[in-house]
Length: 393
Image 1 (cartoon, rainbow, N blue to C red):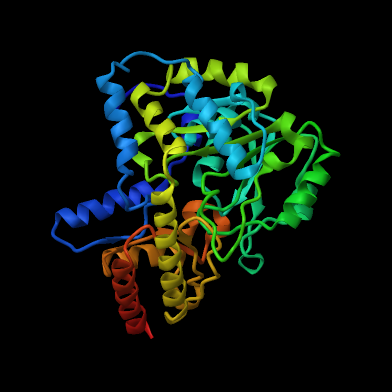
Image 2: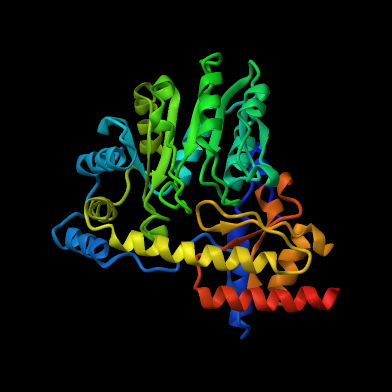
């Protein structure tokens, strides 16, 4: 035992259970088990070659030193041009801050507004780091409940009703992790209109899956709403879109008045993102997008297979996955809790998934399946789970 006394806030910091499941799946695989991983939110594709080559070239050309804390000017300009191409939104490159992945933006934004006495509204079920960091700062997490019957979209009326004088920040995520839900434009319009009565409330819009929508849906970026741009933080990056999870490269568009604050956080936290990765980021945005289109087409095919297959399982129903690469089936009809289903599927079936409760209390009765895996593996995983569930009938 140690006599070290940690700060109390350390006890409030949670984790991301997908990595716990990943570790257990790897342990079972080392024991010789055949494991199909539908747990981790990571594309199973390689980073496109031209992006890799850009990083190699940057290293050979001597890109070995520090860069500006907020990112290379050329990269920030490339981000602004990309956002205009995709969203027709004018973005000042000086308001773009490049960071190592998506989580630093979450941590920085929540830290800016979270403290004892403050309230922060966040999606539940939602990405677990939101609630974890809110609690870490000492703020009160206020869950924005996402319901299966609503396609896991938020209700603007309900969110607006949750705002109090203590509310500092609202976190939005569409397309969403873990549900695959996409919030309709009408609800976003209503929320933005209602926020005019609450000018003290900031918005963090996590749009990391903004290029992954299906059945003709189009992404509605919060950047389209000029009336909230002075308090809007939009998170995006390269990890999902370009299969660059291990490169650790993300960015956010910040209100002009907050750029100095977040840049200071970057200096204190990580100094800068490594230079070669930033050159790869430029190549990704400015180069051909054919690989992205091919990946999205594959995800769409897998989505249809997994949703149909999950709905065919005894005691399981699954809403259509509108975006991202996650299905979030309701398994309550099996008689299993979310945690029990996760354990059964992995330990007995060799299929790694993540219990819905890993994403908040509202995830009870659900399990997240990532379809960032091959169609063949998805079909095999569904077959194994069917065998397990049929044996319980």
